[in-house]
Length: 314
Image (tube, rainbow, N blue to C red):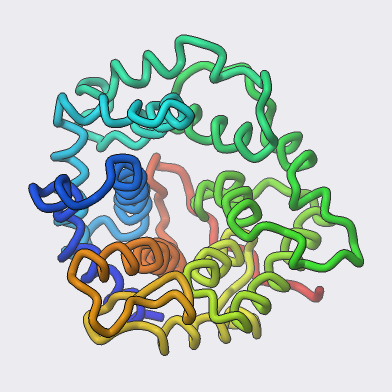
């Protein structure tokens, strides 16, 4: 895992500047580029919490800082109206520490929270949970449901015993776990029966994703296992997922596509290769830097960081 992580982190560090460079602005569609930058900001946050002294973090932090200081960037968040307010909320929540109380993101955050975004009205359970997570991260008042109730109405919690795991959407399941557990920086807050249920579904989904050669989804599921207190280096599905990703990784550190059947072509241009590789490589970097973090006596806010509970009998 250390080798896999080093390669992915170095590739992201070498290529993330493209997202805000002249070429990236010209060659990438606006909304996918905005999404990619939000993902990069999330990686920066988690990386800084997990391994703040890592020198490979520097180019990622620099790119995020540059984008969040750009007064023209917030208007790109509203190019696609259906995503606008959620993007504005995420953009405000993921601002670098140096801009916590100042910067162009403050106006975008104020616009996002001026209406009914931070109320339960007309939200799916998944969107409700995501909104609460980023509202909490942005430290803005809200009237959203609490985490235990949001878990109870989630698709993960509602998935009945005996039903095929393939019925579940992996992204919905993994992001539900990520938001409950703050990407592994707190416990998921689940009762024992709920925790056992979530672990079972995540392990079964990992087995299925490995079988199908789904690189991007496997990376997310390894992190979800960690967030639920499992050790993905020790679970059979986690170990298989790690092998799958290690075998898929290119010599330059990239994971060259979302899956074995959707990998970058041998003759792909640099832009095509970037677009194929960015999502999966970032997911691997995010998952591994969190899983590999050493337990520290003091957490990011000065509170103790507990070691994740190990998996018990299923």
